[in-house]
Image 1: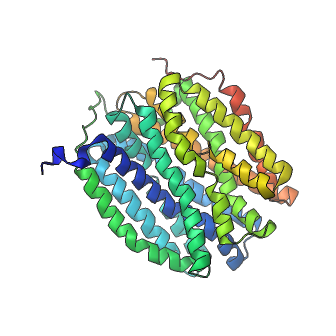
Image 2: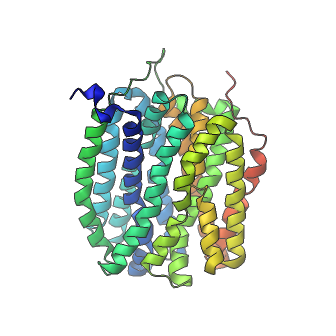
Image 3: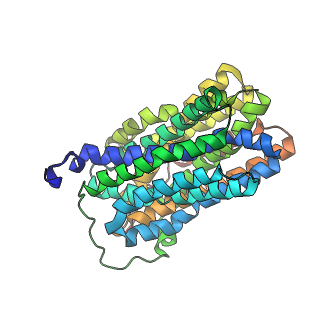
Length: 401
């Protein structure tokens, strides 16, 4: 069969390959949230130790995006190779993290998995943005829904496996899970190499590393960077401390922890493409404003209660937008991306997420120490997210040439 007529070249297969691959990559990375209470118990880690671990992991997973965005623009003819390589090394380092009995090598390898994972986003979003310029919001939203599914189903299924079959032996899980990762890597490569996507236009000038930060001269990018900062502050700050709160303060087992961690993204999996579809038609502003409002109010409601059905429902409500709103923000950024800087634009968006996540981990750790209460993280997340609803009613969303 001619490759150009192969199902691998169809739009649906192209989007599905990138979206599902994205989800599987996040599945492997998100499992660490379920491992975390077990690691805390094994090594008797304090709140300050959790802050350091979270900061290392967030920095490792986010900071490389500054350079990966630049590399993605320079290596635009090799995007189909960058994606399977990102997935393979993310899974490899997660496996190695479970192969060492010492704490800091565990953290180092888990952090290197984040570095490898960061090589996915700039080429993947650039591929979708250049192939589907008129359906950019929806295409990027499907990509984001893939990651949301991985973030949701990963902790849920991993927690179930640990409780049911492995007696909480998370190290054994990392070893077993590496076998399918090899096969998945080969499949992603085969699907992408046969897609023969149209190559993006060659820009009329060379891409420079400084171009990524140079994008901030446009107000639209400072606005979008702020949106990513606040969203990541809340989301990743919670991911670093909430599993321990659920296990220690509420007495949940690994499955309960995995279930509630999954709620931070679960419902957003289905909402993401719908949000992207409507943002292509009614504009990006309304979805972003609605997301900020729901995230902020849900976190404050959890702070008022802290457990029971309200905890579950509020996490699910926040989960509608914590992940899916990122796709609308990224689509808005790509709308305004200068020619030849698609990867750099994605890199800037994920760099702002890194800063939000890193600051969130540090500030939440300080607040937990000061209040001696893990429950305080929800109040802080709500206080940071809520003002964004008002700010984005008026923030610029277009680039002035």
